[in-house]
Image 1 (cartoon, rainbow, N blue to C red):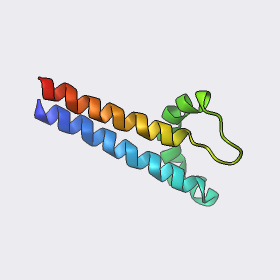
Image 2 (cartoon, rainbow, N blue to C red):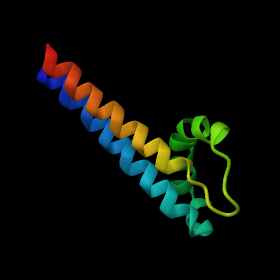
Image 3 (spheres, helix red, strand yellow):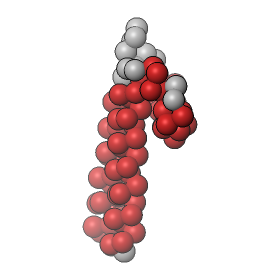
Length: 86
């Protein structure tokens, strides 16, 4: 069971860093338009779009990644609690 928990938490952790990379790349459009940037965007945008539906950008600032990261961290903690019960 510990291996499954570790695998899931590692995947969540990697996705966390992909979201951070996507946010940082949004500040430099030339990186986001690169092949690497498009790959990262294709991985993170489906998840971020869920939060963008409910939280519209405030002018030029999009705060949906902050809420998305918080939800991801809550899910990570929930996984730890769930596997702690088993």
